[in-house]
Length: 155
Image 1 (cartoon, rainbow, N blue to C red):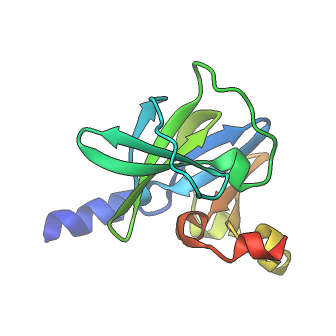
Image 2: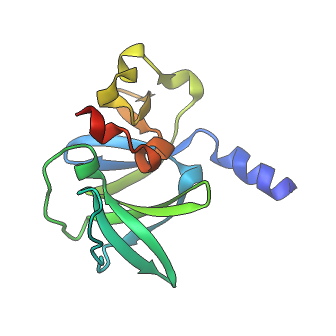
């Protein structure tokens, strides 16, 4: 139990950053289990367009979401920098396809802004804005990114 608490402590305030085009985003590192290269994806009928299908990851079947499509951005061909961030939310694993992974950053709570403007339906995946030197990173709410089904009805 002490090791779990220590592990949570070392992950607190740490974010895996990734890019979609020129925009950079961050996910709490505590949700990330691994980063893998692109793999063959098996399509599954009747899923939302942003759910590309499923992959077999060492015997575990996980759904794969193209984050570009989830954010209503145009599809972009995958290349050698495209990768899948495997996340775990409430014991549910999923893969997030991103253009490229950037780095792991530590962002203090004092450097995270949660302006009220972000609470609109169009920004419901954004948890806050992390200030990193002269740059900003949009910090995502991983739970909403994976589990929020009502978003599509609002557009």
